[in-house]
Amino acid sequence: MFNSLSERLEGAFKNLKGEAKISDLNIANTVKDIRRALIDADVNYKIAKEFTDKVKDKALGEKVLNAISPGQLMVKIVRDELTELMGGTEANFNSSGNPAVILIAGLQGSGKTTFSGKLANYLKTKKGKAPLLVAADIYRPAAIDQLTVLANQIGVEVYAERDNKDAVAIAQNAINEAKTKNKNVVIIDTAGRLAIDETMMTEVANIKNAVNPTEILFVVDSMTGQDAVNTAKAFNDRLNFSGVVLTKLDGDTRGGAALSIKYTVQKPIKFVSSGEKMETLDVFYPDRMAQRILG
Ligand code: GDP
Image 1 (cartoon, protein in one colour):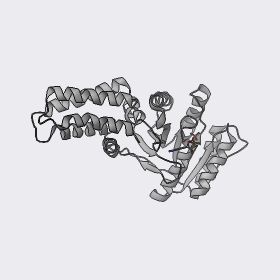
Image 2 (cartoon, protein in one colour; image 1 turned 90 degrees about the vertical axis):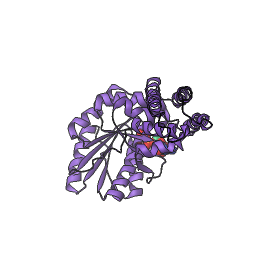
Image 3 (cartoon, helix red, strand yellow; image 1 turned 180 degrees about the horizontal axis):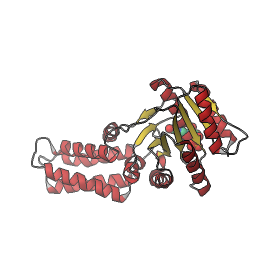
Image 4 (cartoon, rainbow, N blue to C red; image 1 turned 90 degrees about the horizontal axis):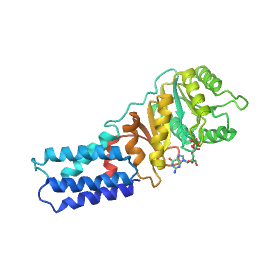
């Protein structure tokens, strides 16, 4: 994950290794390398520039201290700023309610259904919850089957209505079903399209208005870089979602989505998903991710 970015940043710091003191010149050179590395990782230019301007200011401000080596100082500053860029501290995920309603939205193929299963498994095994998974994709009957296969793996029930073409009604019926069956978290897997379109956005917004979700999670494929960020913007404009889920971090992703999304939509990344197994879901910790990027 983020291999290329990690290598490039390491290279930027390496150039400082031989330096005894941090200076305006070596700060400027290192910052330039860091900016290029971020842009090549598909971080938007404006974000990369603002990021490196902050790093530069901090380095200039601390250069007089000279307590640690220039290389160590820069690594520390960059680690702190990466953590900040990705949200600073771990975001809260609210699964309380009777039932809590978690709405899952995103483009088709982003990993929504897989994530829905993983989240149900996480809430069941780590939080002692009784989840109900809801298949609210009325366009692809196969989506119900896919969710059922995952649900069977983790021992969670699925609510679906194969002949109902009203996604809002399905979601509402599912919540009633959860109440009668004592399920305390309802996870609604909605339909996705290959691109953002009005019908899909209206449908998911209607579900939101009808069920008053506890959390709305926007699921996005981290391999899609700047597109991920643009899609996030479009979904946030319509849904005002509460958090982001980055999927496919097990692939050869460059890092742009992880680094840019929080800045762009001002919503935290709450979970990261890496793999197709139901157990591969992690709560997102900005500091740990920054540490992983820096190796
Ligand atoms: P949806 O259309 O948004 O519901 O997406 P799916 O959950 O069906 O996922 C689309 C494809 O990506 C499927 O083949 C999944 O197995 C795969 N997938 C989902 N999440 C991950 C992940 O974190 N890592 C990898 N490698 N593949 C994933």
